[in-house]
Length: 140
Image (tube, rainbow, N blue to C red; front, top):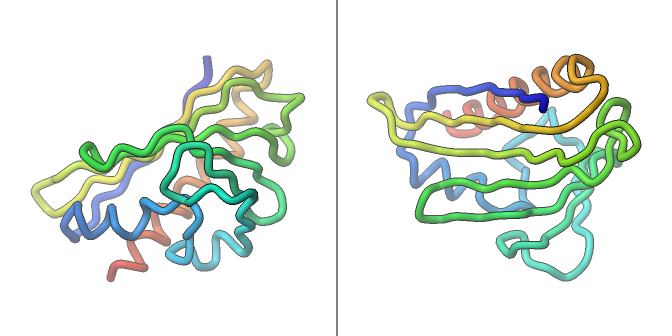
């Protein structure tokens, strides 16, 4: 099983960061990284089963949202290149926030099955880094 992992420290209280990112249908904080977000269906962005399409390419479904533990997880149903549904299985992304001495530790990780694990990691790691950087910038 392949895995990706990136994290960042943000000098902002965890509850504030959580309010910024908990809505699956709102990625306005990711300016410059997410150029379009299309909501699919009628499910709210804070309800399990919410679907979205990012940048006209990434089809994702919200699998878990836990306000008490500041975490959410999502499945990638289809995507470009190494994230295409024919190239990767069981892709589960997880965003977890926790209090740190400087504010908030934000961890973005994923696990997946692929015959090309290295390609998936090479593709996803820079995206996670960019998303985390955008989140930090949006809270500055």
